[in-house]
Every structure is written in structure tokens, then in C-alpha cells.
Amino acid sequence: MDFRPPIQQKKRQQTLILVFAGVMVLIGVVLWTGFGPSGVQEDSDSEVRDSILPVRPIVLPVGVFESPIFKDLEQLPDSTPSPEQTGRDNPFLP
Image (cartoon, rainbow, N blue to C red; front, side, top):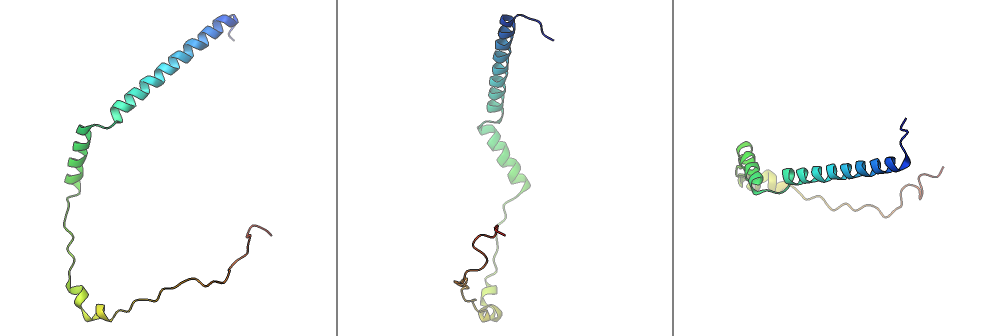
């Protein structure tokens, strides 16, 4: 148990608050500079992304759209929900 006079306890609390605030500011600065925007980091990210996932062109065979099977397909009619009300007004009431 701490048997210091109230003045010393208050001074110690103020000192601890200042140390805590200083540590928070220091952590904020480190996080901001370490994870903040930087041109070097973006360049290295794009290099890694390009080496892992090479960009390939998408080739779409046009002959599929000219086949008789594709031409025989019919578009489905728009299905709109019926105007009838389904369910109860308040499903949480017994």
C-alpha cells in the first residue's frame, strides 16, 4: 500500500500521465513514418505485384457468338415480384 502524502501522489500521477502521453506521441510518429505514404514503398509493391501476377490479355473467341446454339438462345422475360403482400406486418409479434 502507498503511504505517501496526497501531494506526492498527485505529482506522481501527473508525471505518469506525461510519460504516457509522450509514449503515445512517439508510437504515433513511428507508425506514421513507418506505414505512411512513401514513393519507394509503392514502387516496390508494384514490382512484387507484377512479378507475382503477370498481366495477360483476355482473349474472347468471337466464334462462340456466331454458333447456331448461341443464336437459338432466348432471353428470359423480366420477372417482377407479384404485388401481393407476403408474410406478416411484424414477424416478431407472437
